[in-house]
Amino acid sequence: ALVALPLWALLVLLSIFSLGLGTTFPVTVVSIQNAVARWQVGTVTGAMNFFRALMSSFAVAAFSAILLMALGADISLGGEHRGPVNSIGGADMITAFSYVFGAAAVLLACATLCMILMEEKPLAGPATRVEMAE
Image (cartoon, rainbow, N blue to C red; front, side, top):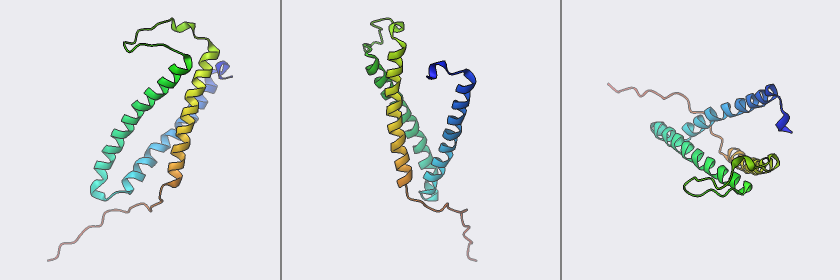
């Protein structure tokens, strides 16, 4: 189980994950910028960053809701705890996080499908200069 994973193995796994994630962001930016006219590049880049941040906050809220539902937590809107947090067993935590990772895997599969279905366009070259007539 991952509970008994040594620190060096965890760092190796996190490094592999970060190498895959680090290459995703530039590819996404270039794909979006290449899909629009040159004068819209700034607008589409700003919109992409805005919606990436917005959807990240929604994802954190959704994954937190899945985790709390799986744990059977009863937390009021005021954030008051109804029971001690340390009363949750390790097996219950593993089960609850398996639901969170399952939801993340479904979202990753949807994102992969969208990338596969995305139309391939050749990369736009440099802007052509327009010569003024004399």
